[in-house]
Amino acid sequence: MKKFISALLALLTVLCLVPMMAVSASAASAITVDGDLSDWEGVHTLSVVGSGDWEGKKVTIYGILGEDGLYLAADAYHATFETTKEPWYENTNFEFFINKNGNGDNQCWVSAKGYTADNPAPTTSHDKMVAKMTNEKVGDLNHTVVEVFMAYSDFDFLSTGEDDFLRIGVAWKTVGDINNNGEAAGGGNDEYWVPKLTWPSNADKAHVTANGIFNRNGEALENTEVVGAKEATEDEEGYTGDTVCKDCGAVVAKGETIPVKTPAPDTNVPSTGDALNIALVLSVIALALSVSLAFKKRTVTE
Image (tube, rainbow, N blue to C red; front, side, top):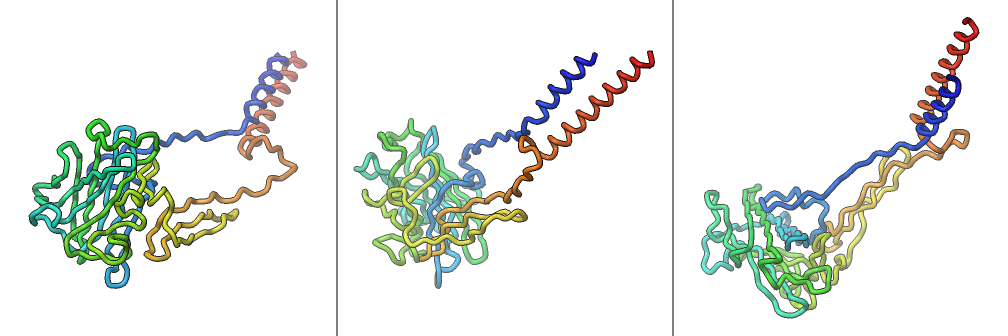
């Protein structure tokens, strides 16, 4: 009996001294083309953000290469929502040029032409393109969201060759609806809202990757600064800071939370487990000793 108790005590002690680990499994949600951008969280984006006379106007462009095809989205706050003009390109549109291995542009677009509350399907450049558009008034502006999916199997020009990115030019446009801080026609104010360094020429297109959409050569915007950085302490979390375009105020890349600092370990306390492990070990030892003493007392009495 004593040998059994000793073996049990040794086993429990070893098990209790093994550090506890929390296992968490988190997988990115599959993007659904439904006009809801919540499943794009954490994907790198490009933006045009209006300032001065154009304060409040902006468009954020999303892009990602999935296993099954190309996903794109545009989230725009704009003045004019046009749905009835002829030809299609005089309406509110999300336009993009897809480059096949460095040569040959393929123009694609999703137009608000024909869009109504009763007919939410936008007009598209290709029958096999899956697209969704939503629109609502927010103050004096329109808030329009467009999501697009193009399967590799349906579009041969989505081939990336040996690259892990797809070159693409993007623009948000409504005829006569002007914004600043864009790159269209070499920069300046324009009805083509184009993120900087992504004008659709072969040399300057944006790069869509598995992690999001980036400007030319996958570089961040020029003239940026990191704001909101804060070191972590033992009482508060820290933050690496957001990378912000100094010219337009757009957030190029979100920062990350820095965990609260762990206090320096007490050298007199075993470092193989946390306080809970130590308390558990002591409890097991006390229990084992109690059982052992009780057994011994019973043996003496008998």
